[in-house]
Image (cartoon, rainbow, N blue to C red; front, side):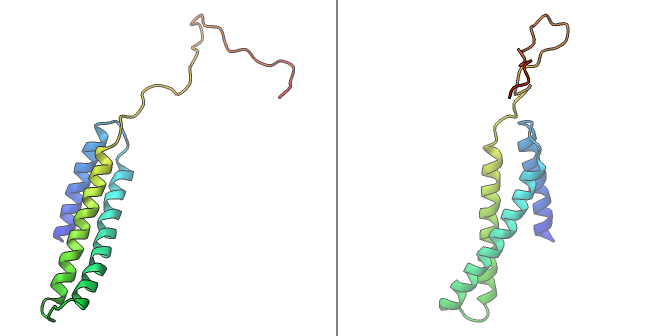
Length: 116
């Protein structure tokens, strides 16, 4: 439950970071959730491997695997925040020139022969 609350808090935080640049935050928030759970699963697998190969007793076996899972989740969240902080401001305006009617600008020439 605590992880879910932390994830909601981080999603709001990452949304604020990205919206400052005028970018939609939904994709970045999904990236955070994906990297969080992906890191947690990968960290848990690595922790399970470390605990089974190492000299870990049966009492601390689950603790090692879960600690590595949390470290993996934290690394995933760190990567997601680095990606979000690296966003550039969204371009303002059009990607092509727009001629408004009545502006006095000549329209671009057109091919009237019908050739491609």
